[in-house]
Length: 395
Image 1 (cartoon, rainbow, N blue to C red):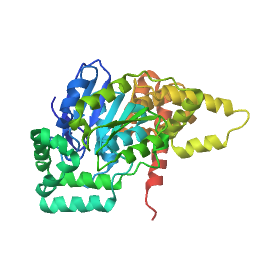
Image 2 (cartoon, rainbow, N blue to C red):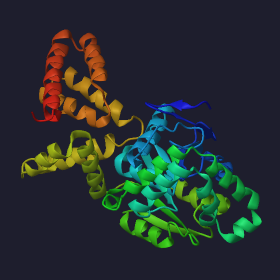
Image 3 (cartoon, rainbow, N blue to C red):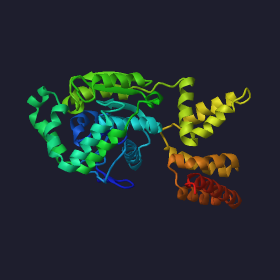
């Protein structure tokens, strides 16, 4: 398919498999392109709609000046799903791609079904070494690095029997633009998901390469222990396990991704709902509501947290952005001023722009009546002014 245009970049994208199959997003590692998934995709595309892309700074995607952040790379992945009309997907990331998958699991939980974290860690290496590598690549280019990395990517046995394949990966690395590679090194340097993993609620499969010197089996153990619903698999491979052992890699994914999602119990639904409620409405607002719990309202608060937020706002059929706009329109129609104010404030947490709110309020003028829309416009102006004052630097 042609490149997909996002806000500031074009991403090189390829989609394989049936259009009506469950979507599976594959996120590549540092120094590779979507071609690293070729052999795995041949197997997985029989049962999944496999979406793969060259990450920002790699292959056929754009490489704007850095530094990048994992959040920026995660929002690229989220924008890719939006551009393809995919509300919810399984996500599999390897190494740096695994950091992107962790970001999605932590910050875009409503878009993620199941997660595969392969040859990765909550924090990879140390920041100083990544910054040194970025500086070296900017100064010297990719050649010196390309001559040394394959030995860290593959076992000696693989290089001996698949020398041509290893050489192609090396050539891909050498052909990358130094600025894009360096900017991704800087993203990895700042990434640390250790404080966030306990909040991941999606089922997770952690894959380790038994001979991986970069993200070792011990890193995978730490990931699996930190995540609520995680399981571990070891593959006979080094760092790029999806390239070195594609059949075993696909065999690990297939049954995990095909499992039906177990219905959450009330406790888990409440925890997930509270997380989404904070993400949509803001942590401070929700915590104020929790501090006002009483014998009269505690069961009501539990009800809306479990069902409104733990069930409806997490459904895959609509993105959170659309749900936010719909809620604003319904609050205008029902003349619920307090709730409308709340959701106007919350809209920017869901990526809703002021122009989009304006369009929705104009729509309500036709279908809910001019007086209702007039009140809503006044309320929106108050909320926008309040938000502008909060973000204005002190004089």
